[in-house]
Length: 416
Image (cartoon, rainbow, N blue to C red; front, side, top):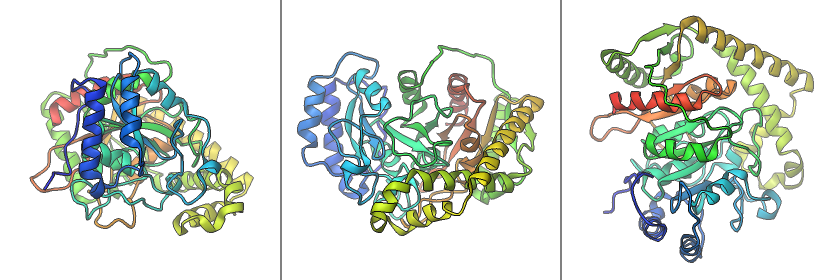
């Protein structure tokens, strides 16, 4: 039987036509089981035509999956929902336009949880189809893990890039909030919504990030970073296996010469969660107010429930939550400075991918970095034969995306 796991590194050579055929053949071979891509009857004809016309650029001929809340010219946007595409779609997103200008090929739309909220799509985990691939960027992560594309675009409001990347055993990157323009993307909670990348390895992320992030700086920070461990109630949400994996990687990094600092930046973590929820649900309800009023019966129960949770939240409570968020951001920066930390380490999820496809797993381990808008990424870590993947999450100060990727390369060299 064809293996469902076969990551394809973006750095592997190939002409646009060779890469297009490789993507198409792999999609045809395994997507009937993985279900990472939204069905497209004329995909082969369209993609080969794109390959023939691919412009020169740093991503020339790279097939890319695009999460189905991101508008791409020529492909309908449905947001994983039953709403008419002409209602939820719109002009092409800047992120897709930048990919095309860099020579990338749009392999198709990838499956998402409905409107990137909670109701899962049909995608399975390529490592074990009985388990969730995570979400809401489920198709993007699974499509990369299964080798259908070497790069995919996802979005993260809480944990929707990092968690599925970890569950699927690949590398995921959520930049600083706002570093990739979010226009042309169906909104969830704009205070948090961030476009991100899925790739087989860090080299793939590093090749794509300069093309997509605003104000990219060429940097080569050779200084080893000071690594921080955020002890306390935040890490208490991770299960025994996730903590054991974290501690194993910490020890390997310590033995390799990295300075490790343990601190407690989130002693009020449960309050932070409550504030995050207030902002998220208020904005979700407002983002969908017009559509929900007209098409409410087409929404799935999980999405409708989440929207309903936002309706009672007042403007005053929302404004207070936004002010509290700014206070948390300032305190996290102060804790980080006081501890001398460059990069925080944490599990990317509470454990490995849960069994079943009814939910996409718990996003709580990604919450503090999404809440504050800090850049984060997850790297795959070694695991016993037959075990499901679980990665290592790294987070750095806002705007330090370039340094984070540079420092992550050193960490990857130790833990892989």
